[in-house]
Image 1 (tube, rainbow, N blue to C red):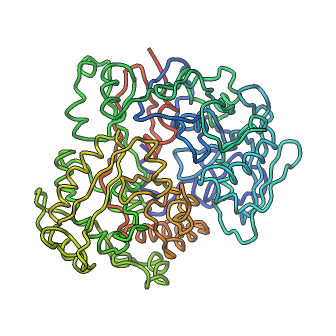
Image 2 (cartoon, rainbow, N blue to C red):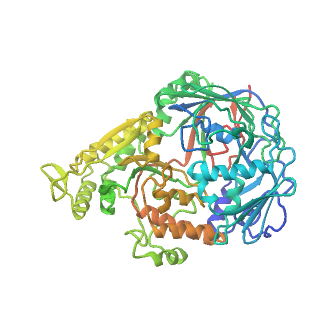
Length: 604
């Protein structure tokens, strides 16, 4: 692990990738959010790959649920994850050993002005789609417009910031941003948009979901055999144009990436034990210690690997939909958090080994410091002090239980808060002044056993408050449909966050996103303070400003009490057949995007 990087970042002694570098005023091989890229223009491969990794073999991954679409770029349907990341490509690609730095992929160079009011990309002449046709500026411009107007919600916000797009020369594309845009991240976001083949969609409804159209991308894999209820195979393209591009060398080594689909996580685990799949991720520490001792492990045919990381925890827990009346009072949300007996649940399910998520960016230098806000963070928050909830300025930590099932102190605190919010226990039932009971439903994915286990324990604790919570378990497709429409009271919510938060934060937390179906603002929060902190992140011109703005946003989100947090793991646990090999060096993000199966390989 690159521990010196984290220590340097924490004390402000940043590595080359974040040090002040020359403003981009001519074509460059890469672009960093701050300063210059760590890798020079003569780099041959990323430091966390094995550039000599052999090609061949297959990896078989297990998925719970099913898919019903091959188009990963629209709101409708559910497409396999691998299509978006291995069949399609973007103009540039991230280095996963730097907070936010891009290097050329389809684009050979990138250019922008010091104020980042425009960005220009020049395509590599050898870049082609899997059918052999060239990737053209027309494909790029069409892709941006189509995704920005008819694609999934994550593409729309950036499109509204583009004033014009135009072809420059034979292979160049320039995007000019609106005059009122002050967003230093935007040129990087442009570099990460997937590029589609325009001709494939002529005469077709781009928003139509289904499996009839086999997408053509420029990536290292093409779609092979598939059956929506059972499996899909991605086959490495032996004629892949970008195999020798420095940012791709040593990656995408398997001849086949196969996804097998199962009814739930328990079945997927049994399939791994039975040799149907060849890799399995385990999130439960107790299960990892107790149940991964089956014969294949004992014989050495299956290897247990723990992969450390240095990324933020993100947030995982029960999200409360504040569009619903019963969750609009923060004291109710705090009371329900008191009722969640974390210490007892963690001991019961994890042997007490998993640390609790304490804030959205905890476990990283972007997380809020304990105690009162100070310095630049306080200065950012003070103009919004009238709207901030208790804990934003003073500091906030999730309540602790006493470790017993009864959790007397936690229940007493919850009862007091509910009474302040107008709810009291009447004849054993939590109700308002008119006698109407306090009830809500918890929405779950029926294929996720761990969520059901947590929920069983939580529902039992709620009964001590006089709250009768119902539980609805539905399949993944129905879950996505209902959460996209915000049709739920409480649900299990997970949002991964990176070391480079930016425009996506608006899609997660803004007032606009709260009213936009398909956004990630499941809680329905509308906070001018949060949006001000996001704007401060986007306009930050230095690493210090960026860190302060993110820590301030962390305080607003955490003190909002929108999510009852579960736990996180500072390591990822991967069990895999011994033929699957990984590089000796792990990127700072650990087992995340760009790691498995991207940089792994098969070796007899």
